[in-house]
Image (cartoon, rainbow, N blue to C red; front, side, top):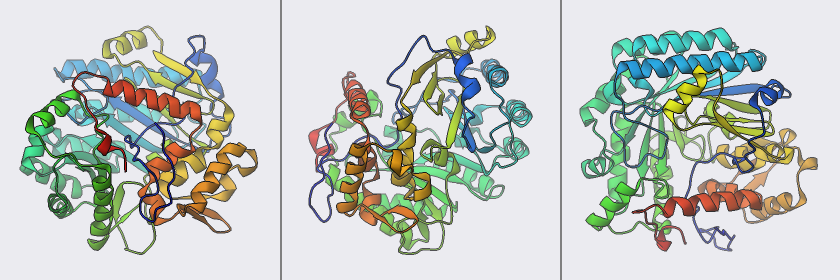
Length: 463
């Protein structure tokens, strides 16, 4: 996919990149000869902090917008088998790597639905994490929740293992779109969960989607009002990603003949979201996250940061280790991705093997991360962490083009996004990528759209 800078005061690119969250470097050069037992022992070198990700692919309901690895929940015994394997994976990696050398700053339990775990499951995994990792510098522990499966007993377990940031899926209050998304929780369920979590945690977050076909700005603002009324400190607000939503949602939308939300309309919704959230006492802290904070004219606030994403989209001395089905580990020089099949994962762990694909990338891919990812996603980077004298000339030429276009500004110590730059953060990330990465992501997008029943029209992308 080609994106071109254009000389327009509002629209800085001629297209809107249609995927909003992705790993970099991608797993392009998978090599079956690479051995995790030989690579892992060396990944601590030069790393100042680490994030941990744990994936739980269990769902009571498969939501039609969800792109993540998931599977239907059957019974408690199935989850118990999986939890045992997560703990065994921690122990296996501890035999290959000194897990306590690099301090952990963030932990994220994602899914699927981690809150389908029982009290004892949560406690078992928490005990294993505390036993094998250095948590002395832990700043954040996130745990994703499906509101029908949370209760006071599980909240006790979350607090006991150190969870600080519970997160739940909301998406929208609009009943028609909740049905389109196959969401089964009621509004009462959402309100009850928000009350329970707000009473026990300082930072509670949830997702809101916008830009669905046929959604008006008035309907979007009604969603935001109801979201704010839940009283949480954090709200993540995403434009819907119609590349990654499931074919059954595309088919449902086609049957209902909703008017298409164009790229321009979605862009202006983004502007409306930012203005509206600021007027309600919230500030952006990254490309899509808002936090209750002192409102200023700044592009993003410095009062709060999502620490997990400081590692996924951060400086080159921060990395991430993943555990569980389809979990990604992004370390210097390599990316590991665990297998996506639950039974294959369990069988391999029982055999003392970590079932993953491994790719190797050039060191420059790690060096460009502060400007390519950290800046575009978080809005600011310290120049002293940017390795400017070691970056490729073509990369720096593209970076200068973004400065000239008014998307990036600087002072003696920092590069930072201007407000127009914040509006186009995903485009800027893609624009700065090496051609090999662009080709890989482009092929991935086309492969998703080739799936039967999926459809993306030109007006959803072109400005």
